[in-house]
Length: 90
Image (cartoon, rainbow, N blue to C red; front, top):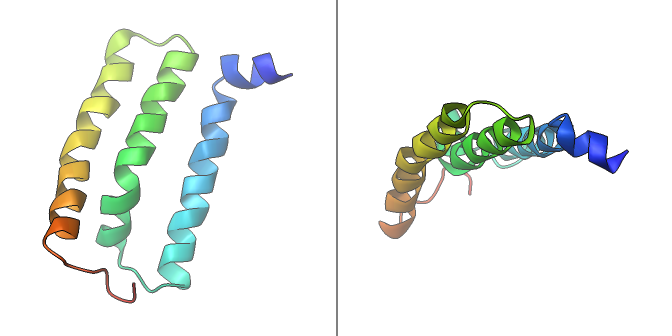
């Protein structure tokens, strides 16, 4: 069962669902804006998409593209954190 969970990529789907729930919680309970949530969770989502591609044996570029795309979002989030900008409601 666990082997199937990983070989099918559904393990990554579970992580994506948890990230979606976290985004929903940040929006509804904490009042964060969509861009703030995307900056925080976007890199994780992209990395997990790369993981999912690797788990199902996709071509190398399906793994590499989301990993590479996660860097600009991560740097955007990091810049905001280092400059002391706090999310609205956070």
